[in-house]
Amino acid sequence: MSFLIVMYLFCLAALAVGTFTDIKTREVPDWVNYSLIFAAFGARIIYSVGMHDYYILLSGIIGFLIFMGLAYLMFYTGQWGGGDAKMIMGLGAFIGLEISQIFHQSLLAIFNMPLISFFTNIIFVGAFYGLLWSFVISIWKRKIFLPEFNKIITKEKKTKLTVMIVSFIIIIAGAISYFSDKMISSILIIIGIMPIAAFYMYVYVKAIENSCMIRSVEPKELTEGDWIVEDIIVKGKRICGPKDLGIEKKQIQKLIGLYSKKMVGKIKVKDGIPFVPSFLAAFIITMIYGNIIFLIV
Image (cartoon, rainbow, N blue to C red; front, top):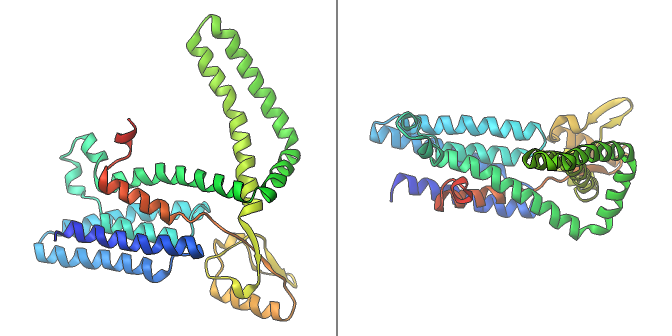
């Protein structure tokens, strides 16, 4: 069995376990992620020494660093949790980027390299998956979603009015220009629709976040990395909050003690979308079809 097949099978196994735990508990165990990272570098080191080809190790390091950049970006913008970030770094190390081949390949071939394909597929699959998940959860919890949606619309009525006026002016300009230049007319109408679409998308996402993804739990139910919605302040001292980018074990222990003394109540936690299933789907598409762009175009 070739080195590449073994690497891909290990990735599939890790992604399968990660998908199961992410859906079930909204967490990916550290043992899965660290096993993925260490196994990737361990296998590449052994194979590099055995084949006397240190580009095998270098490609893993480059893949790891590229996906580490992506992981940090998504983590610090609040899109992914720590488990998602560690998982993608491990996958980057496993898949790797054959830097020595880039300079000898056509642009088409470069875009079809495994790491580039997987990176692209994550963007497309992740966006579709996120929208689908949000749509399903908004339907499932519509009794609490719809009132929140209407509440935000009412709260943002001034913004809504401004957006509508701006969009209306642009659309009217597009309609008037139809008789002189149909292309410009179409562009203006599309531009005029975009602010309205963006406004309602903002309200939609905000309503889902406020109504469907925030829950109150006792401190003993918290796990390391949970996103705290509001600052917890006791006697003028801040214990934890959203700026922490995930609660730590020592903070959880402190909250448990304060809760037992009735100095704090339940803690509001934000549940994120379990993104590892989208990693699995993107990985399978990469193995079977390569870059999804070539399927779309």
